[in-house]
Image 1 (cartoon, rainbow, N blue to C red):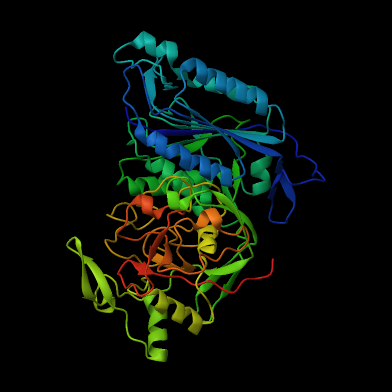
Image 2: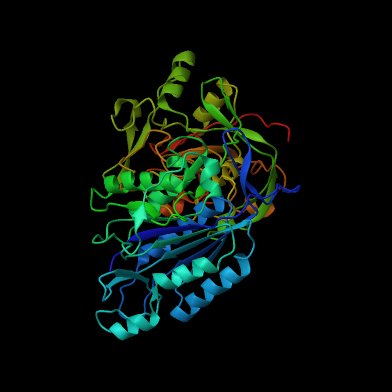
Amino acid sequence: MKRLTLLLCLMLALPLLIQADDERGFIKIKDKAGKDVCLYENSYALIIGVSKYTNGWPDLPGVKKDVPRVEEALKKQGFKVFVIENPTYDQMEQEFKSFINKYGRKPDDRLLFYFSGHGHTIKLADGREMGYIVPADSANPNIDPNGFFDKAMDMHQIETYAKQIQSKHALFMFDSCFSGSIFDISRAIPDNISYKTAKPVRQIITAGAADETVPDNSIFCRQFIEGLNGDADTDKDGYVTGVELGEFLQKTVINYSKKAQNPQYGKIKDPDLDKGDFVFQMPKNELTTIIGKDGAEMVLIPAGEFQMGSNESSNEKPVHTVYLDAFYIDKYEVTNAQYRKFVKAIGRKEPDGYSFVNGTWQNGFKPWSDSNFKGDNQPVVCVSWNDAKAYADWIGKRLPTEAEWEKAARGGLVGKKYPWGDILTHDDANYTGTGGKDIWTFTSPVGSFKPNGYGLYDMAGNVWEWCADWYGSNYHATSPKSNPAGSASGSSRVLRGGSWLDNDDRLRVAFRNDSGPPALYGIIGFRCAGLPVAP
């Protein structure tokens, strides 16, 4: 059984709260006049993912990939997230009850439930359809119908849980294959944010119509996250409502599934429950940017500590705390267009070097004569460390230190493999092979993929990037805790980030590579940093 998604949003009618003196735990919703119309004191999410089944259902490996993505998206929205994997029916029932009892009693909190796994629809004797979510130990109804009913959880039970919640807003999301047709929906659209947050509602969004199935590699899940990150904010007021999210998903999922999926959305036809709208507040972009002398945007990375390194390779150990002063770094890798101005201004020779052809490195490659590499907005390649430093000096910048590069690449996240989390696909970056948004066999135009938390692009993949440091294989074990600048001497310089030719492991933010300063390869480019800024 493949997967569908149903989104059930419960919004309880409660009076507006008086603003507290200590607002650090609150999420504010404001109307266009700037008046506070809703406050969430705390946000909690329970994610249940079932990827392994024990009683006749096929496993769902896609669930294991989707759950971390949803977790990251919800954390960015301010949720404290709890993840439960592969529960039995008894365990899942206990988790629902425990979560509601612990976090669903305060009126000024909000709760979100996300289930990812199998689901099933049964046609009842009266002709209605009933949807069920399937725990790890539920039987396949085609093999053991009684075993299915004993262990599957129906929507009436979910509705009972929803009514037990005393918190202001609760949202139930089911990334599962079952029909949402037991819900009778309408599309009343409130006229402003204040009205939407003050009135109660129960909303539904499904990944397709009742007779449609969805592949385990969930298009809906990916688009839900994109919508939550701001793409669904169609009126650009800084909020995504349930109606906006439904409209966004209906348009994008139909497109990406080539009309195989037709998401449905709306509100239950109940005069007491169809007036409001669930509201997500979009992250505010507080990045400080400047324009360098070469016209490149640079982002300010704030001063402070971060966790550098990993335990995955000996030269990445140990994970250690590093303090860095604030600094600026280019939002994008240096492009051909920018480097051409440098070549013309000082009479430096055009890039040339080695290219990977038919499984071997061959010399004499001229990227500016190759249609796969010469685009103005593609990153310059076949530049040595000496070339990169010369460009940075010419434009009044410098190369980033290895520590600066890694802090910038992590984008504010802690302990994650990649600039956005722990999962990498061709929708995220340009690396070996193609697929998804990655349509380039060689370099891609800079900024072709989503940025990290600092608003930086291509910190994983596309081209390796030179750092200022001499490389030392055990430098992490001996480096200073404040503003480390690499080994005092050496024979090679640090390279970071991976390239279009590399596999996913080499795109990790902690992965360390190196090469001699004169190296000229079609997989190496760079970006610049600015002088340190006072904390």
